[in-house]
Image (cartoon, rainbow, N blue to C red; front, side, top):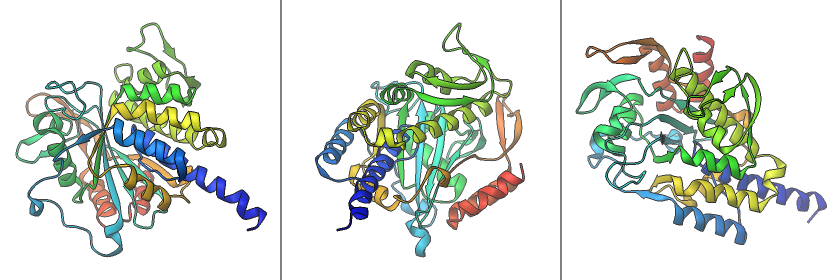
Length: 345
């Protein structure tokens, strides 16, 4: 064994472990990936599996009603639905049961078959569309009307592709992961007075957010003239910052910090039964070559806001660009589609 091999292996293991934590944390927020070996990795796996809440029966029982399974190499692609909520379920206080509540954040993480990149698409919570069996409504009403199964079915109908896994994060988990990392630096593009931290102003520019500040930052929408549009941009900026902080050499080399991240977010995370540490570990190994510049965030295109027939303020989905997004998901070419969407504005 050469000195170069000896030096490279620990770095590779740290990066695998880092992607695991990053995507658990961002599974708290978004991306979910794992991977590492040894006692420390087993401890993290055990902590994740024991502290997360399992979501039963999230997939439609009638398989024929779902989009077709992708064939060939594209069938290896993975789509993970991420739901964020400011409130716990009204029936038992659990984030596993959010029937009667509306999702404040909705993202779809696409991991392509070649595992060369990751695409994260935000969906505006007021997007107006057909909810299966319920008629036209805002997409965030799906969770209220039929819980996680209907939210998943609605997203599958929107994209014409299957969702492989689901995760729900209570926003309080954002606070915990930020504090576990010792703060997260974000570059705030738009100054605003916080409605969640009265008297606190987020000036334009770089901030090292504490947990309390991070929670206020990702929740804010009333301070912006374009409301949820800026809120979504801020949430994407926060996720990028968390991911970037976790993947630094300083964090990867600190087992206590990594354990703290998992411990901080797992109690606020609910996942389907297949989204466990074994699945994350395998995906983490496959994503070991992915770097921050291989992760793309975008928002489902819209043509602006409007008013529903019953007087609600809604977001109008751009149907022409939606067709491109659907094509990207259905043919596993999303990485090629997103630049076209961005170029078109």
